[in-house]
Length: 293
Ligand code: NAD
View 1 (cartoon, rainbow, N blue to C red):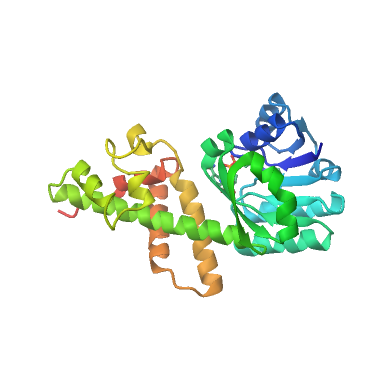
View 2 (cartoon, helix red, strand yellow):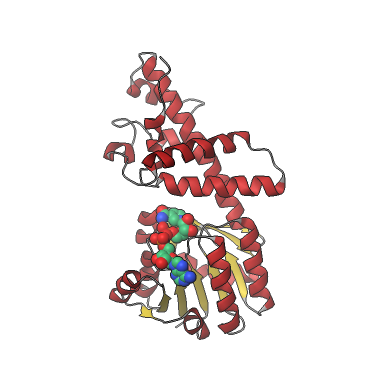
């Protein structure tokens, strides 16, 4: 049975590692936060004192970390320690440039590398139903797939290194824009005397239909159950949406692609987060729409 190194056992990493342990793998975990490591030990993860120790005997090393800078530092340590042919899977959400750099570093050390960010949040990580968006060579992807299949319900192969991160930020940029659009439509409907129920019934079955309305309606009491029905408790926190919108703007700048609505969405979520909304579900942005009386 394969040994897996798991680096970063936070809100997402812990349930992902838990599912690997449940599937019978030996998981060697690293996290500088003592409480994270303790929680991981409680579910059967073996605590390691360093990234090098966790990587040395592993067939696969998975990272679930906050940002590109940390990922690059950790991947440097993995590249020094891991045995040839091991596959390195980074499931953190990071910038495309760092993802490509991490992949090059791994290849130079004789390792296989896949960037495989996720959608599905803590709920999906716990249930093992995450969607992975994967980038890297076909060989690396094939080696990573059995591990991704345990932690997720679906994996989309997107292309070469960095393609997974590119897919993730393009999707989330569109999600941020469409959620703001949905909120504006419901706010205007209200001002025009239209009930939320009537607005939902029309939009969700018309050309304005989209995931932000049909599945994740930002107004309570209409449509399927969503965080709006639960006081906008996350869900997918606005602070994480802001992180992804910033990554999208970074990528738009460096690739010289105009994304005016992506830029505007980033500004709107930034204001919301600065006003204290970082922990609120991202559909709670509807609260920030000021009426123009
Ligand atoms: P988190 O802050 O809960 O977990 C990150 C963990 O990494 C922490 O436990 C931290 O101590 C650890 N860490 C930091 N530096 C480290 C290092 N040098 N070595 C080892 N461990 C280190 O964050 P999270 O919510 O688990 O998110 C992880 C990644 O997944 C992020 O990139 C995030 O954008 C992405 N993501 C999160 C969600 C979500 O709903 N939480 C959804 C999709 C994607």
